[in-house]
Every structure is written in structure tokens, then in C-alpha cells.
Image (cartoon, rainbow, N blue to C red; front, side, top):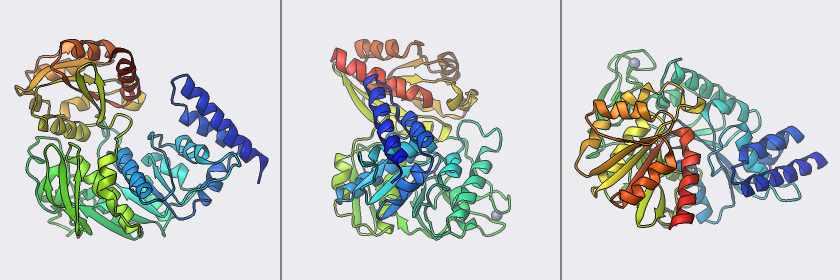
Length: 446
Ligand SMILES: [Zn+2]
């Protein structure tokens, strides 16, 4: 083995551990260092995975789906490499492999479950060809100013064509994802929800991808689940929702969610209709790849969402749930999840406009905040760089809010004077810092 490969592994591990001591994430930096020291390291390490490499792509739900898939396999005794922190560009993906390697510079793993940013697939696929790709959905991220979805679809089509052996586990309820799967020659299986679900579709929201990608006509829908997900057909060219291989039936929402798929009855203690898709996608991927899933429900019971995906904290007597809401579809789903909790609650909404968030935050006008006008909303505090814009947006929905630009003060204020049940909804660049604040407050003041 090339001595530079061992050096790269050691350096990355050291860099990552230094960052962790300093309270930083350091994962992407570790990956960058490893690739700089030994460029073929990702290709070589990925080739040592004994069985299957899964990747998870799509606008929303990547991290949760990928982590569920990883946990489902691990519960069955499979040894898995995973980028659990959600670092999903080239450096982050390299880091997942490098940090999982032993001090001898070698990988000892049966599988890899890797979430990959759609645009970064171009840099990942030349390094390794996955065996399976999960495609969760294609939503507009913030604003679709530059035909963002079309560009993303072109990129994905390119990489799918470059890996014709790879099969695709695709959300059949999303016309965009399903169209992409039919355009490529890769073998595919579908998952979806074939019947309307109560409470899932009463949202007034902007629906993207309503037009047929094949011929441009307006799709007709038998029903919507949320955003553009639903049962669609093109009246002009015949393009339609494909038949569904993994069909969730008898979907029940509330304190917990449950559904049936095949002979399996799945129960999870999460809120959020979108989690039905996340769980279903992970189940479909593992099952389709031939793994037994006899402990799937047990895994769901023990699964702890990480990194601000419905992550729970407790500060003094206040139970806090942190969740990422980075685009209209995601935010509307967050609102649905919050209002299924019928107890009184306080809300903190943190909106930043850094580069990764999209500096134009006018997408907030496409979110159905009116649904936060109910009596059980004790207070709403707006925070972050663009708290003024968020306050204005709520004002137009006739919803009063407390302005507190400093995130720590906003959260601590509601711990002190709130009703003990706090939801913190944040957009992308606010996630890591808000999570650190919550961890710090939990440690210091509990
Ligand atoms: Zn059509």
C-alpha cells in the first residue's frame, strides 16, 4: 500500500479530533486534507467495501433517510460506513470513508450508506459507482431562479447514465423523480403512498413540478400528499405515476405514525408526514438490496434523529425540538408536524441569508404561515440575520411575533417565560450554531 494513503488517514483522523476538541465539526476539513495528501484515497477505500454501496439523493429528507437506512442495516449485524453528520459534498464523503478506515489505512465494512448532494454527484461518481441510489424527491430549494431543478435533473441523469448497473429506488409520488427514472436506463423500483392521507394535504402551498416534464402539459392530480407529491397523470402524453412496488397503506398520523408495507406493519414515534416517506425509502432500499429486516421496528424505536432533524433537548423544565426548515416544501411539512402537537407551544424561527441558504429569502412568502394562527401557539419569536423579514412575513398573516436577533437570547427567553414546550425551526446555516447553543444551554443551565 502507498505510504501516502496511511499518512492521509492518520492526518485526517488527527485533524478531525483536534476540531472536535475545539467544538467544531471538522469533517469536511479532514476529507479535504486526505484528498490533498493522497488523491485516489476515496476511490481505493470505496473499492474495499465488501457488499453494497448505497447513496441517497434528493432535495429533502436525505440525512434522515440515509441514517435510517444505515441503522436498519446495522441492526441486522451489517458493518456500515455512513456520513451521519450530513456532510454530503466530495470532502465530506471522502471523510466518511477515511475516518472509518483503520490505522492500517484499510476499510473493514460490508456496506456504505452515503448521502450525496445532487450537484456533488458529478465529483463522487468518478470515484466510485454506487450499487443503489435512493431518490427521495426534487423540490425547489429556496428560489428556482436559474432553472435549478432542471440543472439538478440534468446532473443526475448524467451520473445515472454513467452507472447503468446501479439501480434506483425512486419516490413514485414525485413526478420529477419518476420522470428522471424513466428517462434513464437504470433498473428502478418505486415507493409511494397510493391513497390520500387525512390531514396531509390541507395545505395551501405553491406546487412545483406541476407540469409534465415530457410534454409540458399541466399534470392532472387525483390527489396531493404535499407539495407536488401525489397521484398524477398527464392528460396529453400519457406519462403517469408509475405502479408502486413499495406501497404504504393504512397510513396513520398523530402522536406516532404507522403504516403497512407488504406484510410489514411499521410504527414510529415521530411526527411529520414526510417521515413516512423517509422510513419507506429506507425500508425499500434495504429490502430491495436483499437484506433481511427482522428488527426494523425495533430500530425505529431506538433511532435518534441527529443533527437537528426533530432532535430533542431539555433545558430546565422546557422540552425543546429542533428541526431544519430550508425551503417551502420543508417548511410547510414542519408546520404540519408542529400543529399535530395540540399542546400549547412556543416557537422560535431562525432565518439566515448566508450563501448556502440562498441570499434571497423571498421563498418565505411561499410558506403557509397562516396555520400558526391557532390558539395553541403561545408565542412566536423570530431570530437570526433576517429576523426582520420573518417578522414582516408573519405580520402579513396577522400573527404577532417577538423580535430577538440573538438566537441564544431568543431560546433562553422562551425557556424562562414560555409554556414548557418549545419548537425551534431554523434554516440551513442556522442549524449547526443553534444546535450548539441548545447543547450548551442544556449542559449549563439544566
Ligand atoms: Zn405529458
